[in-house]
Length: 206
Image 1: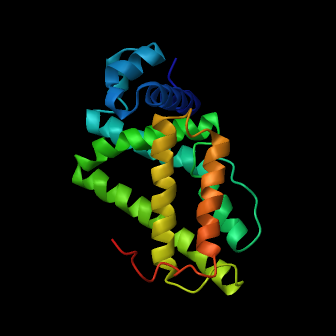
Image 2: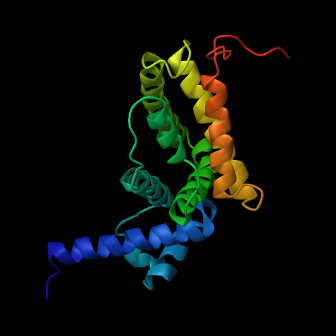
């Protein structure tokens, strides 16, 4: 009996789930055709229909990670500083799902740095995130919730802060449980909102 389009889509969904489970368990370092085939209960020959080479598998995994990250439920928030806080909270590993996604993202960095095309793609994704954060910073400034300053620079600082917090929470979840992550983020935002804040216009003294 010939395979239908529905059969093909169902098989592709199965492959996607197998790739995701391998990533969640082993990161990009453990992502191989053999590992995905074992997770799927299939042969590597079947997978070469989807991924002729390891790089095709890696590129697909990165697309899948982007798709999963984008489809995660987001916190509802108003305007201004509340919206900026919600966007930053959405990045942190505060739930099991967010922890898995962040583990996979961090494990992808080494793979991306070794491939110029993948590295450029990562850089674009982080730049897009900074642009979105910058728009939220600008809105908070218009509402008087943040002092004047370069929104792009403040957004870059906020992104750097949460990515650093992500790494610490992944390596030492006992020291950085969800509640403490939220506390640290709120401390950071409070420092930005302080009337004495420079808004990121002047570097701190060494």
